[in-house]
Amino acid sequence: MNNKIISTAAFFGMTSIVLGAFGAHALKQVLTVEQLTTFETGVKYQMYHALFLLFLGLNNHLNTKVKKTILVLTIFGVIFFSGSIYLLATDCLNTFNFKGIGFVTPLGGLLLIIAWSLLMVNFLKKKI
Image (cartoon, rainbow, N blue to C red):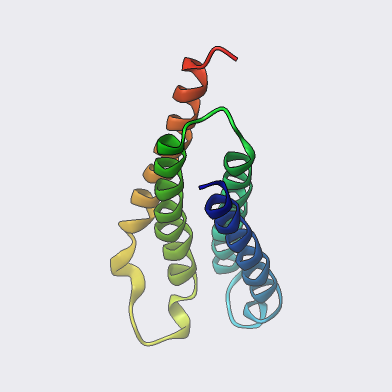
């Protein structure tokens, strides 16, 4: 399980760097400052959660079931939160209107909050 978590962390970290560079260089020419700031928010939250998963995968104080639940919540949280932000920020670059998926962003945020809460509750229960 730890290898899967750390691999996911590495993937999220790597892709956040790629997307950050893409935003800073390629998208800088075609998006407004506000749209770029929105895009960068998605990148930041993706990287924060890559580090969160790295911590989770390197931690031996939680059982496998809790780790798996946190992993799933975080994966879907990042996809829904950061993914929808990427699509909404770049909406002007395509013919498909992504504004209809805006409700997914807070759902992703909620999943991330639940993942962090689960981590907190499980550490509070531990006698370390």
